Image (cartoon, rainbow, N blue to C red; front, side):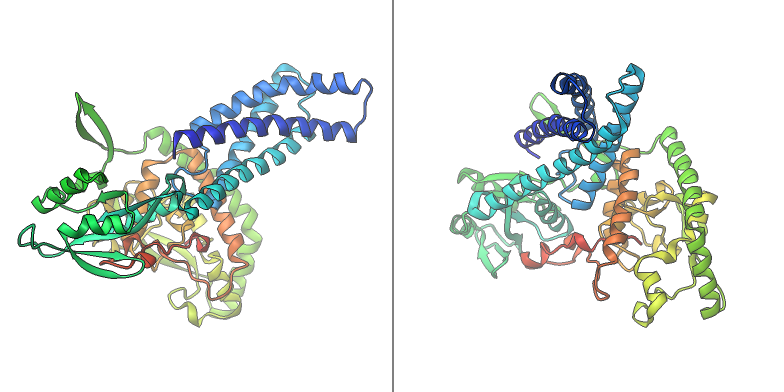
Length: 482
């Protein structure tokens, strides 16, 4: 996210806040005409501007509400802004109550909330449309990624999710078997073709494709052939960036430290504080109990129907919870392992993930939380790598970051772990509430999807070199909750 673009969105937000307040008061004045219209109207509208602008400034900075952080994803954008606007209205109402300002009426605040939320979403969508239009017209910088592993594909996926960077990946460059630099072979995988070239011909290839930058994403970027290629590219005026490949970066949060021009990467362990864990547990108990009460008629109806159809309502599966401790995870008795065999009522339950509702009981028992990594079987957990085991450092959840991006039980643990580790590092109460709203969005969208719609795995975990057209194929609209 460029600083200039973030500043533009922030200024636009402040203008929307002022305009929405003005329009809310104006519409109320039309509905409830009163004497002394102009002076009274201005006297009521003006005192709210400074508190509203000040509060939104704090929320915008603290919650990082530019809309592009973490990659462009409309459900996340909508849920985050909805929560932020709700907090803004609540704080304004509290300020008005403390100051005994009767102008802070509920009608005005609700109308203001609707208008400002709509304006925030439109601004960010318009900014993205302008960025995409500029990119399609040739305004983006073309880059080539040196590498063909998971990190290289993850990098390509993340670049696609961040249009504000104005980068376009035109292909992958990956080394073959090196005997010497002059006889080294390389291959370029692009959207059009895949062809071998000598390392000495890479510069000519870059110029023909109008490439401006090389991003090195190799497991060993210190190899002599790679160093020489980097030196040649730099001497010819190409910008070169390096992605650190050390294993420890995947099991800790990295921070760049500079010591008199010498760059160092500080590896910092990360875990949720006792206060954060207490908050998650409290939220699980309160919201879990409320959801069970609200959903009890639906739970009873589904249970009765399954008794008639299958003889029993519930089943359990052994899953691994926090620190790998096994527990019984409850589900409705529906055969989710063979979705093609499901029809009618049971197919609807599986499609909307209503089979998972009994896990609210697991939430109350403390085996699960509302939000967190989805629990997996002991068989899968036994094959975890060290960095995948980070999923086990917190209580598993009913829904999570991986699920709102479309990953479910049938997808690989590696794919889900990438999202779950990101969730652990970026955790906040705001993120949990946002993911709950995104799950509701996901289930609502799934009601309108065709029966054949299948959530897709982000392609960054695909093994082996693939054409760029396949690498970039991601469909976040098929997000689903496991």
